[in-house]
Image (tube, rainbow, N blue to C red):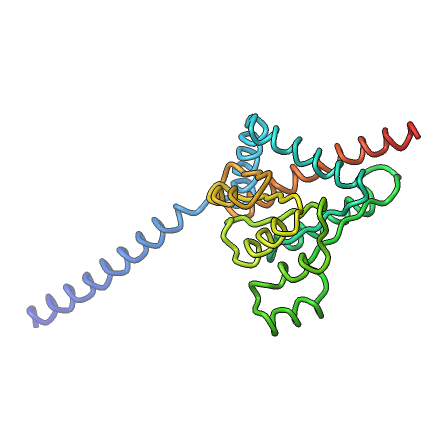
Length: 229
């Protein structure tokens, strides 16, 4: 009986030890996650925005992009925008700021997001493959002197690369917005804005914030010039 009791005691102790080990493992794993994900994200985003704001090369590139957009619009050209997923939404957002208005009433400016025509997108994808969904539209709509603004957090999206190549062949000015791992995109871009992070949502936040600044500069310049006429 004593031996049986001892065996049972060892058995229960073993189970208790195993349960305690699992608990500690879970607690250790959970402790690695931020207790306040929202606050952690805001802190991370603000730090990245501060790095962007202190990056002279990035700011110079943003001003150069504003200038090429202004030059294109002055000449009666248009801005074409492309992106996938969240970047597609950002492309549409930026196009809306340009063709509608950013802050002030003014004449409309020509901007088209090539992410919105579901019939064209699905027809091209079906007939030529998804890699060509933007390039085919650039071929049909792009003209020398237009600007192609391509948004890709990774810098590696095949359909974005194909669109940039097509734009170069047709004499468009090529502009890219990407994250820190997308620097190789420079080979296809006349101007490349690189966010100082590779965290996808923060990359998107940075280039949308910068794009708002560009829209503001474009709008103010176009309004000053219109007032002089």
